[in-house]
Image (cartoon, rainbow, N blue to C red; front, side):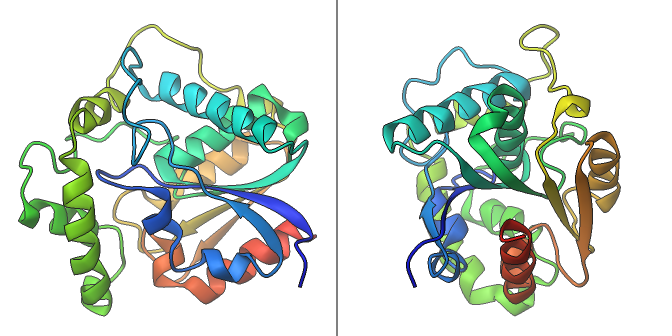
Length: 250
C-alpha cells in the first residue's frame, strides 16, 4: 500500500535510548500506511555531540522542536503527523505544536509528554551499572517478567549508549531545575488535535498527569490503556497501533 501521509516518530527520554530501539516493535506496522521518519533526538543516540549549553527541560524541548522542523524542511515536508513519546519526544511534540502549528496535522503524545514534575533522582547515572540499567528499564513496562528477553537485550544496547562520551552530562542537563530559560509552552493556545495516551499501570508518571494535560489543551482527548505501563507500545502494541492509526486517519 502506498504511503498516504507522513509520520514523525519522536522517541522517549530514558538513558541510552535511540529512535531505532524505541520504535522497533511498531514502526513496521505504521509503514503500511505512513511514510515514517524516526530521528535520534538531540542528546541521544547519534545526536549527543554539539548539545552543550542546553539546560532544563524547556530548553531541550524547544531545541528538539527546531530539530524536527529543520528535518521537515530537509525532506521537503510541509505538514506531518507526529507521535511523541514521554518527556523527550512528547515534550518536543508540544513545543513543535506551539512553535510551528502549520507543520503538524495531528499529534499523539504519550506518558504525560514531560508535563509532570521533574524526577526526584536521575535514572541510572547515580549508579551506572548493568543492574541499574536493567532496573530502570523494568519500571517502564507493567510486568517485566512478560518482557524479560526484550529488556535483557535493551539493557546491553542502552548501557553501551548511555556510557558514550557526553551522554551523562547531556542527560543530567535535561532535568536541571533552571529558573530562567525559555517560557513554558502555552498549552491553551495549541489548536492542533491531540490524542494523549497513558498506561493504566504507568510507574513513571501517573495517568493524572495526562488528565491535566488534556484539560489544558483546547482540542484533546485521553485514552488510558488498560494493563499498560509507561511503554504502551511495548505492553499493548496492538491497541497502541489501533488507537494511533484511527486517530491519525480520522
